[in-house]
Structure formats: structure tokens, C-alpha cells
Length: 237
Length: 237
DNA sequence: CGGGACTTTGAAACCCTTCAATGCCAGTGG
DNA sequence: CCACTGGCATTGAAGGGTTTCAAAGTCCCG
Image (cartoon, rainbow over all chains, first blue to last red; front, side):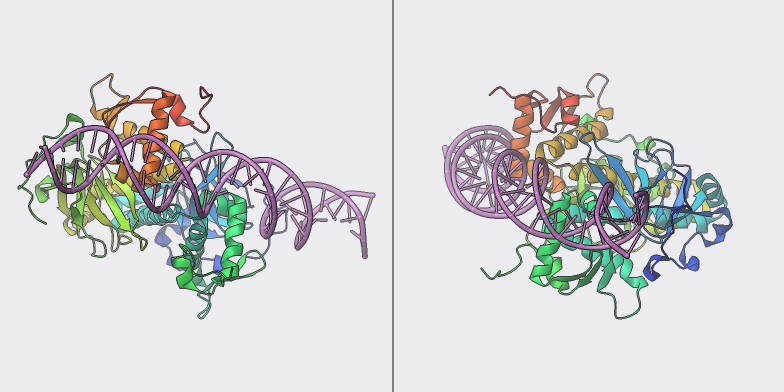
């Protein structure tokens, strides 16, 4: 379980790193230490109280829950810069799991951060900001899950990924994404089956809404078609 | 639009009122004023910055968004005691709408609360707590939307309602709920069609998992059957 | 009593899931 | 070096669930 160094770690992609200065707990960076995780590795298990506060530095992590039927659901996807674990007591029993190779997390002792917040309103504000952003992400995910067809869900998901990741790419590449997660993870995130994810991507490609290079690299060709891919126009018989 | 007093307002049900002392902003109650709304009435529109902080006193409210296709989605259901509107700037363009007759909201000027939080760590903590609870509610809703079948979604929804409302009922009635919202609203909350909601409730009744008195009063008969109503056992031919 | 909104039920079309099989790619070991 | 293995991805076909359209039933209120 702790063979962090046994496998050769691929180098992080340029859009996967956060710049150290941009996070709101910059003043507390001395409290944190950076941990590395492999794909699928559990970062903190469900049930146990979340004593730590995490920030994704590179890669991606998901807070997962596994149902009785054996299905897994990803409740929230954390990308570089996102925080997790600011729970006052219990966090609905989610586990945190790395979903990308070379996922790096900055780990803060939550109690110390909380104590710092009591004396420094700016840190309290940063904590509040973090919770608020987590709430915003969940709302966005809820909007996606609320769509009716699978093609719409996958389309909205791609747009979300572009919006959340593309600002780390150089100018002129804001329509490309390298998906940080597998088809299986997308399926668990959208609460649909893997096969449907694959079929939806194929459909979107055939429609000319996106183009794929390999399995992970996606380019948005027709953003408007993705936004309302309800019943996507005319198909040639 | 502002005929608040023209209709006779039914008296609030016992489980719909919050006790004034229990909310975390008790010290700021002098800043707030209580507003009344009718079912379907818009409390604050989408797009405009949320300048106010709301707490539901009685009834229920939902933050809604309407899609291009004409469908509506309810992103978060606010019950007595719940807060809404603590946005730092923009709140993803949701509108807030009363979904029950005689919905009462306590309205706080957000800027003043925020200023109070800067000098009083306890208020800052309360603000944080509110954002955290909103996040928890969204996670629970996400778990429900993630279920596969409609019967599961409706079953989980009923359990959520019981858990969030029943503690206001007297001892021994923790298995009954008076649903604060209509079938249409349930449909928009669960992102399924009204007909499917109705059919699911009928199925659950036939299975003996619940019993209905009228359309709004539900009693949980077999909680276990609701929790994992995946494929609900044997049905008599 | 009638209107209107809400609720329920039915039938057909459509979409998604499931089961199954194949293809693809990287890492491993002979 | 190459075949092999395992995980990931894609595609097909059958079955089941949901949506949509339609209509009837219910309840409240004027």
C-alpha cells in the first residue's frame, strides 16, 4: 500500500501543476507537506474523521462512495488547486482516492488551520471561500447529472473539464483538454455505464462536436453543439 | 407579484417552524426581517448578485434553474433552518423560489453579516458552518441523483425528507412526513418526469414500503426496503 | 357547480443498461 | 526481442426502464 516510489512516475503535464502563489493558504504553507499517490490509491478512507485538509497540486482525485450493489459513485472531482476535507466533524463517509498517476496533494493539519482562522480573519475568509467553491462545484455536477440523455451529460462534462483545466494551458488552446480520468471514472462521475460514456463520445465525434487524439486528448470543435446537444440536429439517414 | 396578503394564508404546520434560538446567527437577528411568500413566487431572480442571506423559517424553497428545453431543475431544496445566499460574488445564476404556501424567510443583509464576521470569529464560524451544510446537502442530493432507477431515487428522496423534517415532529412519529412539495417539484428535484415520480410512489405503496394518506402525507413502513430498493424482492405475479 | 391545478394511469417510442466479444496498449517475463 | 497478460476502450444485441403523449381522475377554491 505504500510503495510510492516503486513505480516510475511520469512527469506531470504542464496543465496539471498549480502555481504555489495562487492558493489562499499561502501563509500556512509551512504547515503542509506534499504527498504523492498512484492511480486508484486511497488517500483517506471513508468513515474516519477527516483530520486533514487537502489541496490537489497535480493530477486529480475523487471523493468516492461504493454502493451496496457494487457500483461506485464519484461525488466531486478535485483538480489542481481544489481543496477537500474542511469538515467540521463528519463528511458523509466519503473516501478520497487518486484517479490519476502522479497525483500530488498538499496536506494541512485541519485543526491548526482552524485555530489560525480564529485569530486571522483572512484565513477564516479563505476557509469560507474553499467551502463555497466546493459547493459551487457540486452545483455544477448536479446540473450535469440533471440532464436527460447521456450525450448531454458527457457533453456537459467535457465543457466542465475545459473550463476547469484549460486556463492552465497557453493562449489559443482553451478548447483542448487532456482528460485526467479514465472512461470508468467518467462513468462513475456521471452515474452512467462505461459503455454509454464510450458511445456518447463516439456520437459526439461523429457529429463533429469534438475531435479525439488518442483516448484522453479532446478538442472542442463545436461548443454550441455540446451546450445543447439535446437532439443534435439532422443526421444523414 | 407582491400581493403577499391577498390570499388567506394557511397556518403553518408544527413541523414547519424553526425555533428562533437554534440558528447560528441568533446574535444578528436584529439585522433580519421576515418575509412571506406564496407557492411559486420568486424570492430572488437568477443573474442578479445575491445581496441577501436567507434562512427558511417555515415552508420550503428551492434554488431553480430553467433549461433551454423548458425543463426546470431544482438544485437544492431548503427546509426550515436552512440557509441560502452566502455567495462571495456570483451564485451560478440560480433563482430562489418558494415551493410551499406560507413560506417564510428571514432575510439578512449579507454585507453586514460579512463585516460582522471579520470582527467576530464566532460569526465567521457560523458562516463557514452554513456553507458546509449547504455542501453536505448537495452531496446528499448528488447521491440520490446517482442512483440508477426512479424507484430508488424516489425512495431515497423520501428518506431524506424524513431525516430532515421528522426531528421536528413529536417522539414516535419519526417515520412520517408531510411532503412540503408537489409531485412536479419532486420531479424537478430528482431530474425525472412527473409521471415517473407518481408511478414510483405507487410501486412503493404496492410493495408495502410506504403508505400514503392523501398525496402529501407519507409514512415509512419498511425503511430497509427503501434504502436498497434496487430490485425490490418478489412481486406476486 | 365549475374551473384549474395537481395526480394518476395507459400505451408506444426511445434510451440506457447489461451481457458479450473484440480491439488496443503498456508492462512483464520468458 | 517477442509473446503474453491485464486493464482500458469500443462496439453489438437483447432486455428493461423512462420519457413522451394522451386521457381520466381528484381535490381545492371561487
